[in-house]
Length: 272
Image (cartoon, rainbow, N blue to C red; front, side, top):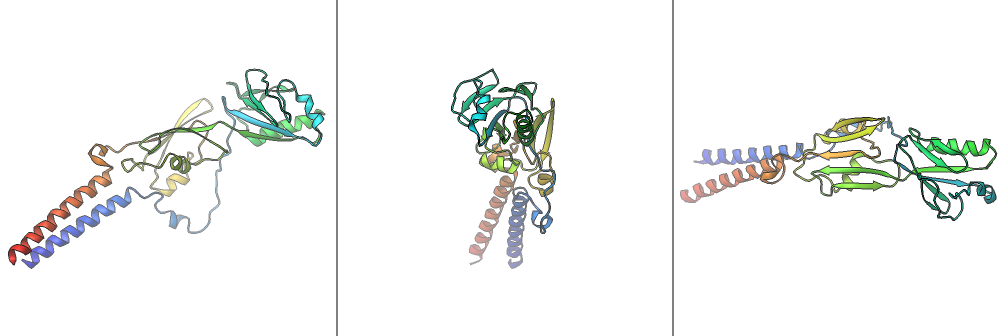
Protein backbone atom coordinates (compact mmCIF):
# COMPACT_ATOMS: atom_id res chain seq x y z
CA UNK A 1 0.00 0.00 0.00
CA UNK A 2 2.82 2.39 0.89
CA UNK A 3 4.51 1.67 -2.43
CA UNK A 4 1.28 2.46 -4.26
CA UNK A 5 0.92 5.76 -2.43
CA UNK A 6 4.55 6.71 -3.12
CA UNK A 7 4.12 5.84 -6.79
CA UNK A 8 1.04 8.02 -7.09
CA UNK A 9 2.76 10.93 -5.37
CA UNK A 10 5.80 10.57 -7.66
CA UNK A 11 3.56 10.64 -10.71
CA UNK A 12 1.85 13.75 -9.43
CA UNK A 13 5.18 15.50 -8.90
CA UNK A 14 6.44 14.53 -12.37
CA UNK A 15 3.31 15.80 -14.05
CA UNK A 16 3.54 19.05 -12.12
CA UNK A 17 7.18 19.53 -13.15
CA UNK A 18 6.44 18.70 -16.79
CA UNK A 19 3.58 21.17 -17.05
CA UNK A 20 5.70 23.83 -15.38
CA UNK A 21 8.55 23.27 -17.84
CA UNK A 22 6.22 23.47 -20.81
CA UNK A 23 4.78 26.71 -19.49
CA UNK A 24 8.19 28.32 -18.92
CA UNK A 25 9.66 27.31 -22.27
CA UNK A 26 6.76 28.77 -24.21
CA UNK A 27 6.29 31.97 -22.23
CA UNK A 28 9.73 33.37 -21.35
CA UNK A 29 11.11 35.95 -23.79
CA UNK A 30 14.72 36.17 -25.01
CA UNK A 31 15.85 32.83 -23.64
CA UNK A 32 19.63 32.52 -23.51
CA UNK A 33 20.21 36.30 -23.45
CA UNK A 34 22.02 36.14 -20.11
CA UNK A 35 24.64 33.80 -21.58
CA UNK A 36 24.83 35.42 -25.01
CA UNK A 37 25.33 38.91 -23.63
CA UNK A 38 27.27 38.15 -20.47
CA UNK A 39 29.89 40.50 -21.92
CA UNK A 40 28.90 43.81 -23.57
CA UNK A 41 28.63 43.57 -27.35
CA UNK A 42 28.72 46.28 -29.96
CA UNK A 43 25.34 47.09 -31.48
CA UNK A 44 25.54 46.37 -35.20
CA UNK A 45 23.22 47.20 -38.08
CA UNK A 46 21.62 50.11 -36.26
CA UNK A 47 18.86 51.34 -38.51
CA UNK A 48 18.56 55.00 -39.45
CA UNK A 49 15.12 55.73 -40.82
CA UNK A 50 14.96 56.84 -44.42
CA UNK A 51 12.38 59.31 -45.68
CA UNK A 52 9.52 57.60 -47.50
CA UNK A 53 6.51 58.84 -49.51
CA UNK A 54 3.69 60.20 -47.35
CA UNK A 55 6.04 60.95 -44.46
CA UNK A 56 5.56 64.24 -42.66
CA UNK A 57 8.79 66.13 -42.04
CA UNK A 58 9.34 68.90 -39.52
CA UNK A 59 12.16 71.16 -40.75
CA UNK A 60 13.45 74.06 -38.69
CA UNK A 61 16.09 76.65 -39.58
CA UNK A 62 17.91 78.77 -37.01
CA UNK A 63 20.16 81.79 -37.54
CA UNK A 64 21.57 84.65 -35.47
CA UNK A 65 20.22 87.07 -38.07
CA UNK A 66 16.45 86.65 -38.14
CA UNK A 67 16.16 89.02 -41.10
CA UNK A 68 18.03 86.55 -43.31
CA UNK A 69 15.27 84.04 -42.70
CA UNK A 70 12.69 86.43 -44.12
CA UNK A 71 13.84 85.44 -47.61
CA UNK A 72 12.01 82.20 -46.98
CA UNK A 73 8.82 83.95 -45.97
CA UNK A 74 7.11 82.80 -49.14
CA UNK A 75 3.73 81.78 -47.70
CA UNK A 76 5.61 79.12 -45.76
CA UNK A 77 7.52 80.85 -42.99
CA UNK A 78 10.56 79.33 -41.33
CA UNK A 79 11.69 81.05 -38.16
CA UNK A 80 8.59 83.24 -37.97
CA UNK A 81 5.00 83.06 -36.81
CA UNK A 82 2.86 82.45 -39.87
CA UNK A 83 0.11 79.86 -40.13
CA UNK A 84 -0.44 80.06 -43.87
CA UNK A 85 -0.04 77.20 -46.31
CA UNK A 86 1.70 76.94 -49.66
CA UNK A 87 1.29 74.12 -52.11
CA UNK A 88 -0.22 70.71 -51.50
CA UNK A 89 2.86 69.30 -49.76
CA UNK A 90 3.28 71.91 -47.03
CA UNK A 91 1.05 71.69 -43.99
CA UNK A 92 0.47 73.17 -40.55
CA UNK A 93 3.19 75.81 -40.52
CA UNK A 94 3.96 77.04 -37.00
CA UNK A 95 6.50 79.34 -35.39
CA UNK A 96 10.07 78.24 -36.05
CA UNK A 97 9.16 74.99 -37.78
CA UNK A 98 7.59 74.08 -41.12
CA UNK A 99 5.91 70.76 -41.79
CA UNK A 100 6.14 69.10 -45.19
CA UNK A 101 4.43 66.04 -46.62
CA UNK A 102 6.58 63.91 -48.90
CA UNK A 103 4.82 63.15 -52.18
CA UNK A 104 4.70 59.79 -53.98
CA UNK A 105 7.94 60.61 -55.83
CA UNK A 106 9.84 61.41 -52.63
CA UNK A 107 9.78 65.20 -53.11
CA UNK A 108 8.84 68.20 -50.98
CA UNK A 109 8.16 71.79 -52.01
CA UNK A 110 10.60 73.93 -50.07
CA UNK A 111 10.45 77.75 -49.97
CA UNK A 112 12.76 79.49 -52.49
CA UNK A 113 14.41 76.19 -53.51
CA UNK A 114 11.23 74.71 -54.93
CA UNK A 115 11.08 70.94 -55.47
CA UNK A 116 13.64 69.01 -53.41
CA UNK A 117 14.06 65.25 -53.58
CA UNK A 118 14.39 63.75 -50.09
CA UNK A 119 13.14 60.19 -50.62
CA UNK A 120 15.57 57.54 -49.40
CA UNK A 121 17.61 60.05 -47.37
CA UNK A 122 18.04 60.08 -43.60
CA UNK A 123 16.89 63.13 -41.66
CA UNK A 124 20.53 64.06 -41.09
CA UNK A 125 21.20 63.98 -44.82
CA UNK A 126 18.14 66.15 -45.51
CA UNK A 127 19.30 68.70 -42.92
CA UNK A 128 22.83 68.78 -44.32
CA UNK A 129 21.62 69.21 -47.90
CA UNK A 130 19.33 72.15 -47.09
CA UNK A 131 21.89 73.73 -44.78
CA UNK A 132 24.63 73.58 -47.40
CA UNK A 133 22.38 75.06 -50.07
CA UNK A 134 21.47 77.96 -47.82
CA UNK A 135 25.12 78.69 -47.16
CA UNK A 136 26.52 78.03 -50.64
CA UNK A 137 23.78 79.99 -52.41
CA UNK A 138 24.23 82.96 -50.10
CA UNK A 139 20.90 82.89 -48.26
CA UNK A 140 21.81 82.15 -44.62
CA UNK A 141 25.52 81.78 -43.91
CA UNK A 142 25.14 80.54 -40.35
CA UNK A 143 22.07 78.38 -40.95
CA UNK A 144 21.45 75.44 -38.63
CA UNK A 145 18.86 73.04 -40.03
CA UNK A 146 17.14 70.27 -38.14
CA UNK A 147 14.80 67.67 -39.66
CA UNK A 148 12.54 65.17 -37.95
CA UNK A 149 10.10 62.54 -39.17
CA UNK A 150 6.78 63.27 -37.50
CA UNK A 151 4.66 60.43 -38.90
CA UNK A 152 6.43 57.33 -37.56
CA UNK A 153 3.57 54.92 -37.05
CA UNK A 154 3.27 51.16 -36.85
CA UNK A 155 0.28 48.84 -36.59
CA UNK A 156 0.12 45.99 -34.08
CA UNK A 157 -2.54 43.37 -34.81
CA UNK A 158 -3.57 40.00 -33.48
CA UNK A 159 -3.38 38.53 -30.02
CA UNK A 160 -2.13 41.52 -27.99
CA UNK A 161 -3.86 43.44 -25.24
CA UNK A 162 -4.20 46.73 -27.12
CA UNK A 163 -4.10 46.22 -30.92
CA UNK A 164 -4.22 49.18 -33.26
CA UNK A 165 -2.19 51.80 -35.11
CA UNK A 166 -0.06 54.06 -32.96
CA UNK A 167 2.16 57.03 -33.79
CA UNK A 168 5.50 57.39 -32.03
CA UNK A 169 7.79 60.31 -31.37
CA UNK A 170 11.42 59.95 -32.34
CA UNK A 171 13.02 57.80 -35.01
CA UNK A 172 14.05 54.68 -33.11
CA UNK A 173 11.51 52.00 -32.24
CA UNK A 174 12.17 48.30 -31.65
CA UNK A 175 9.72 45.44 -31.97
CA UNK A 176 9.93 44.89 -28.22
CA UNK A 177 9.01 48.52 -27.54
CA UNK A 178 6.09 48.37 -29.98
CA UNK A 179 4.72 45.20 -28.39
CA UNK A 180 5.19 46.74 -24.96
CA UNK A 181 3.23 49.83 -26.02
CA UNK A 182 0.50 47.49 -27.25
CA UNK A 183 0.20 46.05 -23.77
CA UNK A 184 2.28 42.91 -24.48
CA UNK A 185 1.04 39.61 -25.87
CA UNK A 186 -1.89 37.79 -24.32
CA UNK A 187 -1.22 34.43 -22.69
CA UNK A 188 -2.98 32.80 -25.63
CA UNK A 189 -0.55 34.19 -28.22
CA UNK A 190 2.20 32.34 -30.05
CA UNK A 191 5.55 33.88 -29.15
CA UNK A 192 7.77 31.95 -31.54
CA UNK A 193 6.51 33.34 -34.88
CA UNK A 194 5.60 37.01 -34.62
CA UNK A 195 5.23 38.39 -38.15
CA UNK A 196 6.50 41.80 -39.29
CA UNK A 197 5.32 43.01 -42.71
CA UNK A 198 7.29 45.86 -44.28
CA UNK A 199 7.04 47.86 -47.50
CA UNK A 200 10.16 49.58 -48.81
CA UNK A 201 11.50 50.52 -52.22
CA UNK A 202 8.31 49.36 -53.85
CA UNK A 203 8.59 45.87 -52.38
CA UNK A 204 6.75 44.05 -49.62
CA UNK A 205 8.75 41.88 -47.24
CA UNK A 206 7.82 39.64 -44.32
CA UNK A 207 10.02 38.76 -41.35
CA UNK A 208 9.32 36.15 -38.69
CA UNK A 209 10.64 36.82 -35.20
CA UNK A 210 10.86 34.24 -32.41
CA UNK A 211 10.50 36.20 -29.18
CA UNK A 212 11.65 33.19 -27.17
CA UNK A 213 15.07 33.20 -28.87
CA UNK A 214 17.29 36.19 -28.14
CA UNK A 215 19.33 35.69 -31.31
CA UNK A 216 16.20 35.64 -33.48
CA UNK A 217 15.10 38.94 -31.93
CA UNK A 218 18.29 40.97 -31.83
CA UNK A 219 19.67 39.81 -35.19
CA UNK A 220 16.43 40.26 -37.11
CA UNK A 221 16.17 43.03 -39.75
CA UNK A 222 12.79 43.72 -38.14
CA UNK A 223 14.22 44.41 -34.68
CA UNK A 224 14.35 48.13 -35.53
CA UNK A 225 10.99 49.02 -36.99
CA UNK A 226 10.36 51.33 -39.93
CA UNK A 227 7.49 53.62 -40.84
CA UNK A 228 4.21 51.81 -41.52
CA UNK A 229 5.43 48.38 -40.40
CA UNK A 230 2.67 45.93 -39.48
CA UNK A 231 3.20 43.48 -36.61
CA UNK A 232 0.92 40.46 -36.45
CA UNK A 233 0.76 38.19 -33.41
CA UNK A 234 -0.83 34.83 -34.16
CA UNK A 235 -3.35 33.51 -31.62
CA UNK A 236 -2.83 30.03 -30.27
CA UNK A 237 -5.26 27.48 -31.70
CA UNK A 238 -6.09 26.25 -28.22
CA UNK A 239 -7.29 29.64 -27.00
CA UNK A 240 -10.86 28.52 -27.63
CA UNK A 241 -10.32 26.11 -24.72
CA UNK A 242 -8.95 28.86 -22.51
CA UNK A 243 -5.54 30.38 -22.87
CA UNK A 244 -2.46 29.14 -24.66
CA UNK A 245 -1.13 25.65 -25.18
CA UNK A 246 0.98 26.09 -22.06
CA UNK A 247 -2.09 27.14 -20.11
CA UNK A 248 -3.99 24.12 -21.42
CA UNK A 249 -1.24 21.71 -20.40
CA UNK A 250 -0.97 23.35 -17.03
CA UNK A 251 -4.73 23.08 -16.51
CA UNK A 252 -4.77 19.41 -17.50
CA UNK A 253 -1.78 18.73 -15.29
CA UNK A 254 -3.39 20.47 -12.34
CA UNK A 255 -6.55 18.40 -12.85
CA UNK A 256 -4.59 15.15 -12.93
CA UNK A 257 -2.61 16.13 -9.84
CA UNK A 258 -5.87 16.96 -8.03
CA UNK A 259 -7.32 13.57 -8.92
CA UNK A 260 -4.23 11.75 -7.70
CA UNK A 261 -4.24 13.66 -4.44
CA UNK A 262 -7.91 12.80 -3.97
CA UNK A 263 -7.23 9.11 -4.59
CA UNK A 264 -4.34 9.11 -2.13
CA UNK A 265 -6.49 10.79 0.50
CA UNK A 266 -9.25 8.22 -0.05
CA UNK A 267 -6.82 5.32 0.26
CA UNK A 268 -5.38 6.75 3.48
CA UNK A 269 -8.89 7.24 4.88
CA UNK A 270 -9.95 3.68 4.04
CA UNK A 271 -6.77 2.30 5.59
CA UNK A 272 -7.64 3.98 8.87
